[in-house]
Length: 195
Image (cartoon, rainbow, N blue to C red):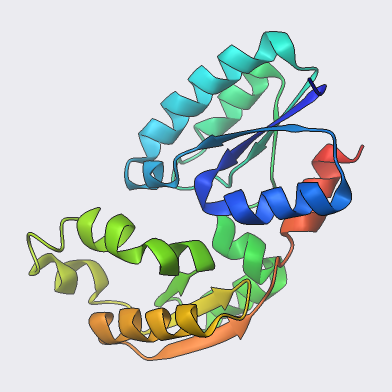
């Protein structure tokens, strides 16, 4: 068993595992479901339970989440268990990079962001998760103020590009694709793991 545990959001699972493998970090990885984002208070509850379970077994606990809509409620939990958390409000800012994300938010605040994970899981996470399959009239209420879709693409994949086009069409919004790779994820994770 390693001295370090990473508790990761499932939406970052592939990318984090790739970074860990490539850098040959000696860490144990524990994932929480990305679908918890539908109910941010559940992120708080499940993270608390996971850190309580892991604390006796690990010297270092690293939480690979942004704030993710928890409105600062993760910080007291991190303090309670002596854990550290990835910098940033959410994965969109991590993948775009702080400077680029601020620029996009300033220029076009009505941007709906996609990542590889969200493109792959849009139907389950958004359409079914928000009940749009049962109540299609909610789509205008939930997405009516958006101006465009920006796919922050981690890996160029023609199938995901096609899916992103279909998502934008479903939302009735123009699509832009920006190849960002891992953005600042690896650098921010290294700040916590490789010290």
